[in-house]
Image 1 (cartoon, rainbow, N blue to C red):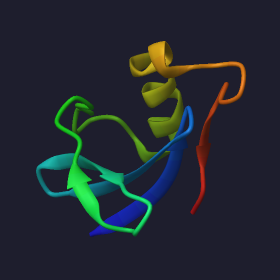
Image 2: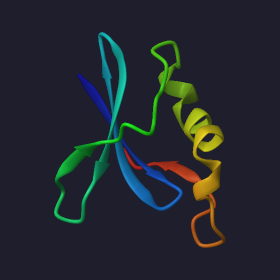
Image 3: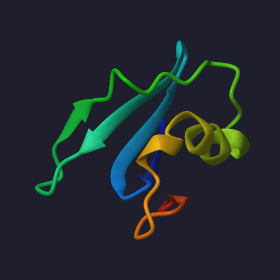
Length: 73
């Protein structure tokens, strides 16, 4: 399984691509992951389009201090 670390408008998130599609997790300060059931990414979203999809989906989280979705790894 491939995992991608992202900063989604200031919230650390890990996206894992599985055979069933994308599974997303919030990452706590101590590094522990918990499921992100409020972020649903369809299986047909390509890895190259993931940041744009999350920006469109989670745009309500955008603030002046955290205006973007950024891939961290």
